[in-house]
Amino acid sequence: MLKAVILIGGPEKGTRFRPLSLDIPKPLFPVGGLPLIQHHIEACASTPGLKEILLIGFYSVAQIQPFVNDMQHQYNVTIKYLQEFVALGTAGGLFHFRDQIRSGSPDAFFVMNGDVCADFPLVDLYNFHKSLPSSCNSKALVTIMGTEATRQQSLNYGCMVTNKESHEVTHYVEKPNSYVSTLINCGIYIFSLDVFQTIGEIFTMKQEEYYKIGNGNKEAGNLQLEQDILASLAGTGRMFAMQTSNWWSQLKTAGSAIYANRHYLQLYKTKHPERLAISEGAGEHCSILPDVHIDSTASVHPTAVLGPNVSIGPGVTVGSGVRIRESIILSEATIDEHSLILHSIIGRGSRVGRWARVEGTPSDPDPNKPFAKMENPPLFNKDGRLNPSITILGCSVSVPSETILLNTIVLPNKELSRSIKNEIIL
Ligand code: GDD
Ligand code: GTP
Image (cartoon, rainbow, N blue to C red; front, side):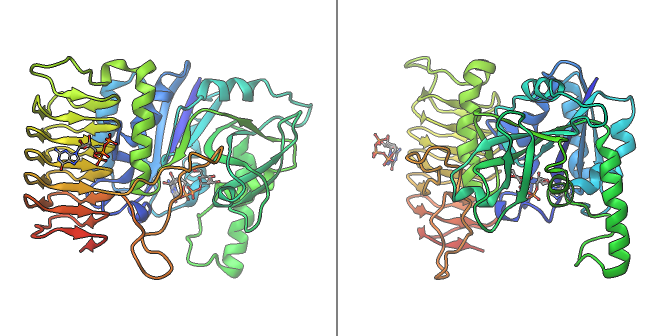
């Protein structure tokens, strides 16, 4: 039997994702028409032998439980939400809830960062982990899913040096200051249960240190999987990496949601074609330039043109002559006649008036650099100017007719009255 843990963080995390994470926890933000972590759950549910998924985070139960109940109805696995009383770090929660993870003696358990998107090769990861040779006194404790990054971008991730033949991780540095390796940690792991002994030993050591010298502003039980555990396991012969060339990306900024949306829609072509809208020619259906997802409760006028890379949420209304490309329209939003939406995210319940133009600047990985990942630039550049980004309307924003919004971020509940370029509307 197998289990999976999804680390979902809490309200203080995902700050770069504001204002989209102001009214919905980032792990539940819809990408490809599904809450971000539903893609993780789906990958787990289709892994043979995987019986239980534990979501660990510090959001309130009220924020997460309705989603868990919904998932429980859709997938044939047990799904539970375990709430940390404070942020315990990426390994603190695993250790705190170790009895829940160990119960039923799973053969191994996956750990997945909730803020990554990928074509998750979970079965391959498990088979790889199982096939690792074990000597008489040491067995593989963890296999990390790794992928190639550019030299420069690798510094933003956990970097691993491996033995090319044995795949053992001989050196691990979390977000190094200078170049270590282009093989990066994808935040997807498989662990053997024995790892809790190692985590326990490190936990006790850190506790002693904490009561002697403190741990900055962190809580006593705070433990970082990367710095505290993986860095110590490197070179012990008990940690391995499986390199994948499948699509993988982090979801840190709103711009990366549009990039992730495109890839999840692409994956639907082979895995869930029923989730993609098809163009049925002239008549009562709108024109579709693949790939597009339209929720069954949305209403789209037959003269609208959607795609490529568009997701339309539940209860959305799209008027006549509207053009939407490379964008996500969240539930209950309305796009009035003849408006254009490009490289933008339109928040829940927002309204864009007639003949308006809402446009952002795409922030895709550099297509000319092999293995390039999304850049996650800060909101402002060094001169204090707004970095051009996709346009984002928070929830319940209203954009008047015949206006232009360019590279603009609008916080929730605003009623705009003019055209806006390169501004944040607070
Ligand atoms: N439950 C819980 N408690 N989850 C947490 C906590 C916590 O205290 N802190 C972070 N998380 C969750 C986040 O929600 C996220 O899903 C995941 O753990 C990783 O969070 P970060 O701390 O933001 O790390 P990172 O994304 O910058 O880097 C990690 O992921 C990279 C790949 O995306 C590291 O594992 C890197 O090595 C890795 O390359
Ligand atoms: P392509 O690169 O071929 O898409 O042409 P383009 O350079 O005109 O594209 P642009 O990025 O400006 O616009 C994307 C699509 O939206 C195009 O198919 C345009 O026909 C359409 N479009 C552009 N401006 C408007 C507008 O103000 N209203 C509406 N309804 N559609 C528009």
